[in-house]
Amino acid sequence: MSGASDFPSLPSGLASDTLAVQGGRQAYPYHALTAPVVLSAPFVFRNAEEVDAFVQAKRQGQTPFREYGRYGNPTVEAAERHLATLEGAEAALLFASGMSAITTALLVLLPPGSHLVLTQDMYRRTREFVGTWLPRLGVRHTIVPPGDHEALRTALRPETRLLFSEVPTNPYLRVPDLERMVALARRQGALVAVDATLASPVNLRPLDFGVDLVFHSATKYLGGHHDLLAGVVAGHEELIQRLREAMGVLGGVCAPQTAFLLIRGLKTLGLRVAQHNRNGQAVAAFLEGHPAVERVWYPGLPSHPDHVVARRQMKGFGGVVSFVLKGGLDAARQFLDALRIPLLGPSLGGVESLVMLPALMSYTNLSAEQRAALGIPDGLVRLALGIEDTEDLLQDLAEALAQVGV
Ligand code: PLP
Image 1: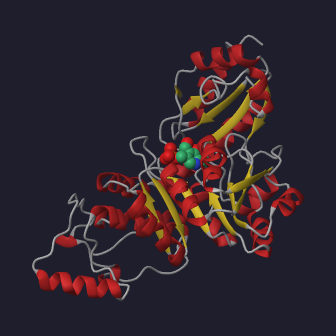
Image 2 (image 1 turned 90 degrees about the vertical axis):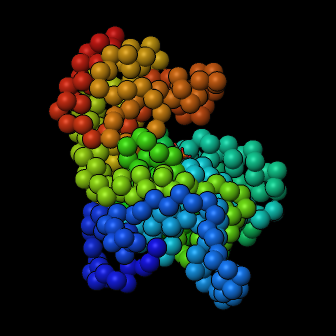
C-alpha cells in the first residue's frame, strides 16, 4: 500500500488521542479510508524481470513489497506504522501474541553467555521463559525488586545486555523510575526494554524516557475488545529490523485479519483508556475505604509505593486494581461469586470488566505457603475494570463485598 505522502502530513506534537485515530493514516488502494485486509500469503511476480528488480532493490536495502506473508503483509504493516506513531517510535513490529514478541526479542538480544536483569512481579510466562528456556542457551539472569536502585546497580554486570521491566507491573502495579533505570543500564552498555501493556501508550510512552524498546500484549488495551491476540514491539529502526529478520525464521507473525481488528480498536484507544482510568481511580479509592479490604494496590492512590513516580511518568493509571480481602481465599471466592458485572476470567484492558483470583487461577498449582513466598496472598483479587459506567461498577462491588463474611 502506498505511503502517507499523498495526504498533508500531520502537525507535530499531537495528543495521543489524535494519534490513536489519525496516526496510521495513509493513501490506500481504491481511495479506501480504512486499511484493506490483504489475505494473500504469497505476493507474486509478473515475470522474471520483476524478480530481478525485486532482488536488486532488496540488495540496496529497499523492500518494494514482501514476497511472502511471513516476511510482511500490507495490513500488518499499516498497523505497525500506526503503533510506531502512537509510541513515538521509528518502527514497530507486530507478532501473533505478546509472548511471541517477548520471546523473539529476548532470543535476538541475548547471545549465549550474556546476562539479563529482570524486575520482580513480571508476567509469569515471561519469568518462565527467562527462568527455564534462556538458561538452555547459556543466558543468565538476576531479578531485582522494582524501585530498588541499589539492587539494580549491583545486578548490572559487564555481560548484562538487557534490563527488562514491566511498567506498571502485574499484579502490584509497581512503577519503576524509567530515567533512573536507563541511566544505570547505560553505564554498563545495556539496553532497556519495558513491557508497558498495563499502561497503554495513552498513559505512558516509555521511549520518551530514553527506553530502547517498548512491548505490549496488544491483546489487552490496544485491541481493547477481548477479540484478538497480538503483540507488538516498538523502538529504533535498526533494532526492529533485527527482530523482523528473526521473526521471518521463528514465524510468530500476526494475521492480517487480526491487524485489521487491532487498527479498528486503536481508533477508540483514547476514549476507552480515559474511562478505564476513571473506573480504576474510583474503584481503588472506594476499596481503600472498605472494612473488608486489607490493602489496595493502585498507582493513582497516594498509598501506593510508586505514586510519586507514577504521577510524574504517567498520564493516567489504567483499569487494573489489585487488592487483598481480609477474609483470605474463602472471602475472595464468595466475592467473585457475588459479583454481577465483572466476569471471572484472565486478561485485562478490554471493554468488559474481568476479575481474577491469582490463588485460584494462575498460581493454583502452588501451595498457600509457596504462593505467600512469591508474594501472592490467597485473598488477592485482581480487578481488570472495563469501560462500563463507574457508578454501576461501584454499586456492584459494594453489593458483592456486603456478602463477604468478614
Ligand atoms: N505482558 C503482560 C504484562 C501480560 O499481562 C501478558 C498477558 O497476560 C503478556 C505480556 C502476554 O501477552 P499475550 O497473552 O498477548 O501473549
